[in-house]
Image (cartoon, rainbow, N blue to C red; front, side, top):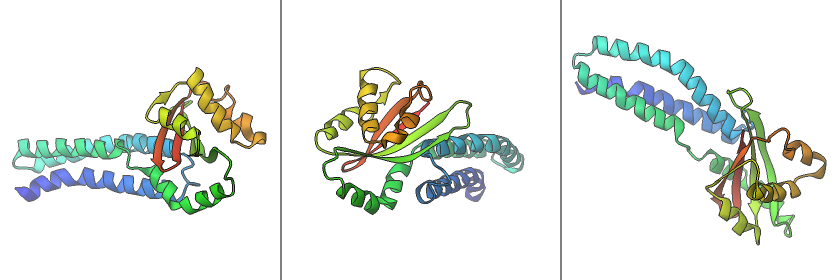
Length: 211
């Protein structure tokens, strides 16, 4: 009976674990493949749902047809689906691991700009699976008085307009190359964006615009 319940429980969970691990490895070590962490995760969710729901229906039907203890196996399948959804939805720290993979390079660059209170690195821009859905992401080094500013916004969702948005955009754009500033921060392209800031470690922050 235990073996029968494990067969009902494990396949969806193992599949979702494999997908998340593969996605995390690609995001961290191959940023050229997935130029945006948020877009990559959203694509993975949508594609997993499109392929996974029909497969899950077939799998659940076959298990309940074969299984002797149908109620127990139904419970195992339900638990498996719940855990699989949690694995796909809960963040697994990809921005933190991407930072660690090249932290020595970021530290070296920061050391050559000791007077800059804000240093911004391009972490990509990409569309999500939903039409007009886009992400643009940054790794930010904050120092001096700017640390308090970024700490104040950490964990909040900053809307597409208002004083808070102007302050954050002003800090990021001021640290951005002037010849590329309008392309990246022009309001016409991302006028419906919300920004989220996450404190990764030390002076490093992850900022993502999701539109």
